[in-house]
Length: 332
Ligand code: KG4
Ligand code: ZN
Image 1 (cartoon, rainbow, N blue to C red):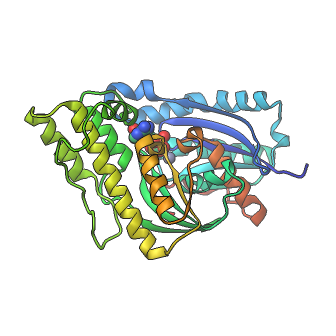
Image 2 (cartoon, rainbow, N blue to C red):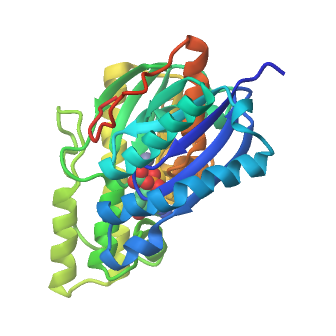
Image 3 (cartoon, rainbow, N blue to C red):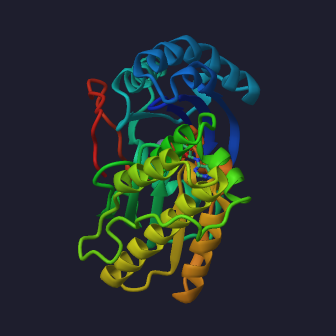
């Protein structure tokens, strides 16, 4: 077949990941190593520990993925590596490795914006998903609404002015004495709670501004927990409900800006949340939009999405110079 094969590398946060993806949407091989255990004692990602772990794991993982696929570097058409945004030490580890491979094998390097990886990943899972679509990207590091009009054509409609939603879930988990990462634990506990029991704010709900804010919600969770007047399950349920209400309100605001788009797509680790998914599905139905939620393995940080972004860009004749710098901040 004339499908192109791209090797993807992801190391911008706490997942070291390598994948081989073909432009016909075959994920040939992929491996993801989580650093949860290293960071768990600190209740969050420690940049220095992350960079070191990426440096230790990346080379053996590259070898393992090539072995899994039974391929040599010469069989690959391009190398795609995350070049930002993210924790700079980790990004540098992955990008430098990508550059070295590109140079050694004389293949084009594609420096991928991690957010572009998330933004295009739904198209890897679903070949029927066409541009344009409205994307809600909700992870530990990001909370954005994007209008995705084509490869390289992204319009950011909203972002968070303080915490990302995953971060708010993680902080709520910490306040309630649950483990890290906190999202799944909060969701589990919330199932036993009453979502109306504790009055919590919906920051920026109804605001003319397009953005998100979750810092005030987190503080309110803190006060509710310290008051000792509420069951933890009720606090978890009310936090989650407040988060859902904020997401829906801000998406309604974005839709009023863009007009109806054919599809509403969710990506990022928080997309694992079933209550959030159900609310988004309902919103999409209300606006006669398709709702697309990629499989979880593609929602959380992974290298298949980075390789896929490379597959999308390669036919456009794009490649990046080998002296390109890693970017801790890099808005889409
Ligand atoms: O996309 P991701 O794997 O990594 C980042 O780029 O941040 O997202 C991780 C985030 C964490 O904050 C985690 O608590 C959250 O996604 N998360 C969830 C759920 N599962 C993971 N949040 C809410 N509900 C969940 N079920
Ligand atoms: Zn991410």
